[in-house]
Length: 332
Image (cartoon, rainbow, N blue to C red; front, side, top):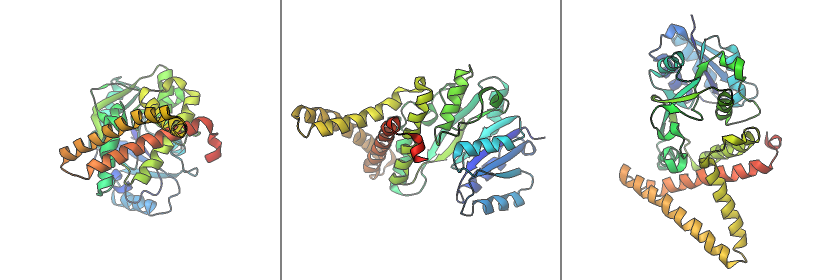
């Protein structure tokens, strides 16, 4: 009998999907009670071949693939949920590797009323072995890059705004609905916002962990955080009360750079104010880079971490501002 449905949206994840399947196969939870439902966005690489090979060589784990014709994450999640038969839904990602007791601890927390949606922390790893990939992994897990997002920086077990992925009882869908397919990202946060508005609880347990692979290049990082910022702005149109201080700082910083940069062309005072903002910022991010360089004994972090941190802030902040003025239908 299937108790747990692990749902995974993916697209062109030939290199990542097998490690994830191996991690699910090695879970401490009874394998006979787990199914894996992969919502594939019609991958054009060898993703499906890898899945089929794993399925044939591991017949004791139920694996099914459903088509995600829209090729966006919330659509994939919904198609997988529709196909799921388990009492519990455990949402994972092709860029993640859950710890061996991940499912067991999630189910235990749900059964014991710790929360309605339960997740843990990310142990962020580089997406590649390059110096910039390693710098990015540090930046996205440092408080200056992640703010107070507990699933990135850790902390004690507590009620939170959101968790990465998350596990919940399938019956929850009957009360708050499916993932919002109008959002191309921030779907987890929006789902949890509805849950909290309905009186539910989102619970973060640091003993539940998964490895998450960060982006490998600054270009990939910039694109990722542009999506995050833009779609956060769209989500705020529905849920303005979900805005947090960590999400206000980057757009305020970018707005200050843009406005003061223009004013400084003809107003001397604006140049001084711009310098007062920029110089301490540079000192702070390079100070963290030097600190990380000494900690990890790698000189490259002194440059890589500040570059990654600035990329996060500027991409997210600029996209958020752009999202406030641009109709989201224009870029779908």
